[in-house]
Image 1 (cartoon, rainbow, N blue to C red):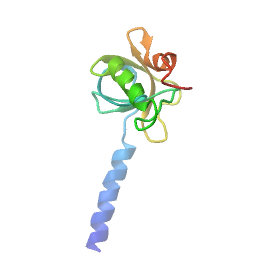
Image 2 (cartoon, one colour):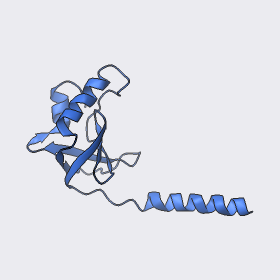
Image 3 (tube, rainbow, N blue to C red):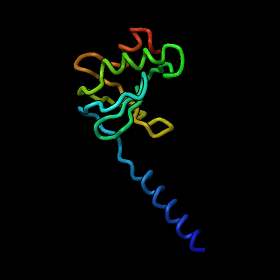
Image 4 (cartoon, one colour):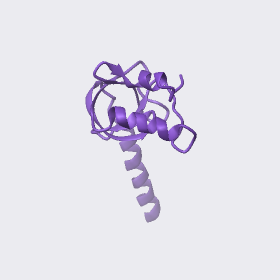
Length: 117
């Protein structure tokens, strides 16, 4: 019974944390980490997935190159996050258009041949 209480309490706390995730917000953020060619982590800890594109995974052909280009474009830099109607993907990541000054990173990855729509 005690184990059920502890286990139930732990799951309840975990469930509360997931439900209390704040709504993504547009704004200017610094990129803390590049996960792959189309995903980054902001200085807020928020994971962002680039809206509308898909790049190869790092362990597949061209995946390392896509990640490297993404790192060169955004790592450690201030980016502007622009949201669309769908703000989160099925994994809870923020979906966004990512801008460096007047360059949309999503589009740049497409132009360079490292992403598809």
